[in-house]
Amino acid sequence: MSTPSTLQSVDSGDLKDRIARFHMVQEGIINQVHNVIVGQDEVIDQVLIGLFVGGHCLITGLPGTAKTLLVRTIGQILGLEFKRIQFTPDLMPTDITGTDIIEEDSTTGKRTWTFVPGPIFCNIMLADEINRTPPKTQAALLEAMQEHTCTVRGNNYKIQEPFFVLATQNPIELEGTYPLPEAQLDRFIFNIMLDYLPAEEELKVLDLTTTSHKAKVNAVTNPEEICDFQALVRMVPIAESVARHAVMLVRASRPSNPDAPDFVKKYVNFGASVRAAQSLVLAAKARALMNKRVHVTYEDVEALVRPILRHRILLNFQAESEKLTADDILGRLIEATPRPKA
Image 1 (cartoon, rainbow, N blue to C red):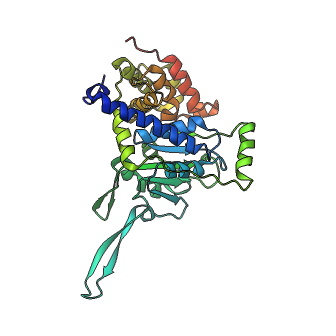
Image 2 (cartoon, one colour; image 1 turned 90 degrees about the horizontal axis):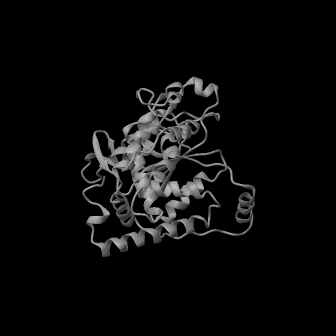
Image 3 (cartoon, rainbow, N blue to C red; image 1 turned 90 degrees about the vertical axis):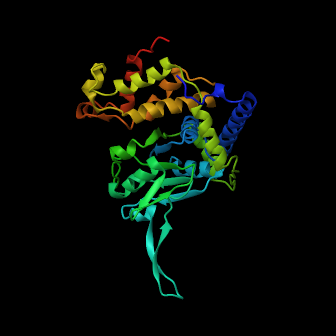
């Protein structure tokens, strides 16, 4: 199954150059990130997939695991306009979107409304510790994340492309945090889990950060090129059997589905939406291209099930009482869902 505009329908010479440039930029980003960030290869790959498909990423990890540093570094390397918002309990929606103010013309005395854009008007926005602000303020991001527009006092303003929200959060059981609403979570293509580093890599972090060494990064791309890469990813073809497998995995996560496995009906209250299937296919296309393939495999889909679905399924009390996580359920789901025959 492929879209009307696929890799096969583009001039081969132009296509070869675009794919070569894609891989050159991908390698350049990874090399630049590793000048600052030690390890975390899987996390970096998932953030890049999110960027190459135009999706937003939620990065979850304990304090001190370099979440903010990772996002800031990627913003610098991509050559995008970068802004940071520190989410706090007293943050207001207008602190994110901007607001109208009354300005008076000194010559005529006439007063007019003037819109002052908020920090959301940028290419890449770091929503730092997004779960430290109440849901009312979190909701100010909903329209921007989905529509790439912002409405203030009935006026609709367009946010320039490309636009990404990279949000960080600490685990919700820590003091002073608010769980993100389900509608907000569903707009993130990935929930990336950032864990502690191995001992040797922690030692390398000390060498980089407790001496006079100062890491520098350089921009390796620009906004127009990122938009071109997003178009290139969408042109990667996917076989109908592979797309069907993605749909089957998402549908199997819903306890209301008659074909869902018994353990899903036992432990899951709500499953993933259609947006999850869309995200799974798009991300699989980006993963295939990043691995220098121009077709999507079953492995591409299955490798991305956990980061794409872990924040989209809601477990019940029985799962919590048995200390089961969303990743535990999704791992069993992958094993229980057979691959369709081509």
